[in-house]
Length: 130
Image 1 (cartoon, one colour):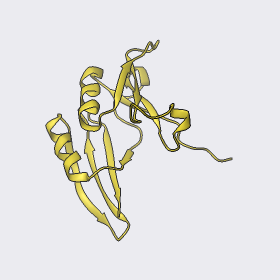
Image 2: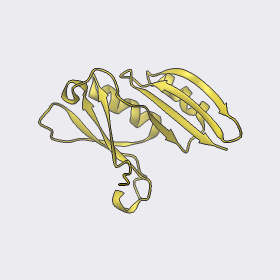
Image 3: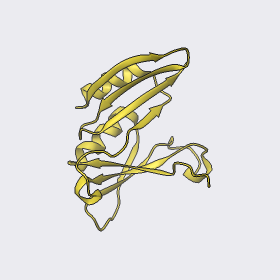
């Protein structure tokens, strides 16, 4: 059976701080949504003028959720984001309250990656193909 990534959730300790971080660094649209297990915000990663998410090949949508509501204090996986120049994003990450953990590193002739912690302490990665 084949499966594809369809959604992500990023645990937060302060959902407003996290929403501000991701809006600033990546320009994501983040909207509060009703949820029985605490605060939750829907995250839309596509461009505002793009067709509905189901029509975008490869566009993955997600959410920011209370860490307690997800039943965890720290992230359970590392999400890698691609399509952006690494150094400018890492500078914005630092300015927005995040922390660079792994500065840009080459992966042979394939590309380069970096890792950072967001305003909530979640570990994320950046990828840029060559």
